[in-house]
Length: 65
Image (cartoon, rainbow, N blue to C red; front, top):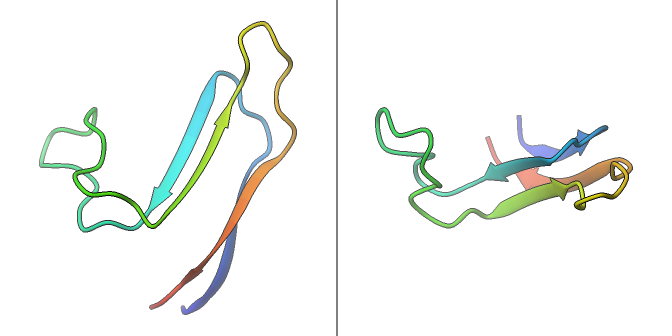
């Protein structure tokens, strides 16, 4: 459904990344590889070394069906 979507990471311990966009996520059977193309939207939460967990990390993107 077309509309604005908000993605949230409530707790990030080490790292969490969500990427939306690009033509293909990865080649067949190569899920350990980064996306083939750049993404249109990325939300990235990283826990600092020796630091506390970041609070809610969130981002909003408008998506078309």
